[in-house]
Amino acid sequence: LPERDRAELKRRKLLLEVTLKSYWIRKGSAFSTAVARQETELTPEMISTGSWRQLPFKPYNFSSLGLAPACGHLHPLLKVRSQLRQIFLEMG
Image 1 (cartoon, rainbow, N blue to C red):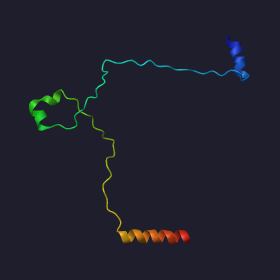
Image 2: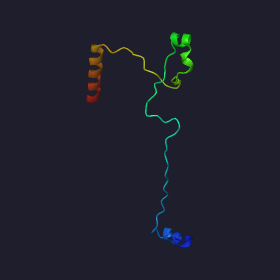
Image 3: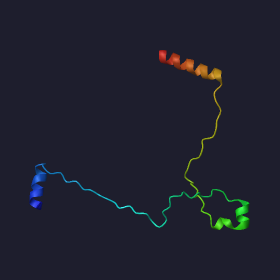
Image 4: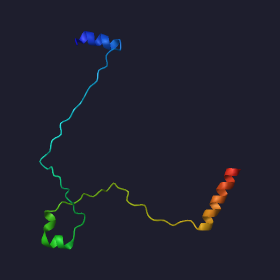
């Protein structure tokens, strides 16, 4: 459509312009169907043989929080007492 007609149709809300994006995906030079296992630990055998130079190592994630430390639990009688207190507070 000419620009003038297109602007007129847009003004009258009879035309809706939609932009479509498309991507082409191709296999790269490093494409492989097998998943390579990365090493996570450096062993004394790897150091002595020098095989660590050719192995891929998994990068460290220094921003992860890690596992929460295991902490203790309430005594069963204290748990019952807190539940009773909550019930009475809800009752008023």
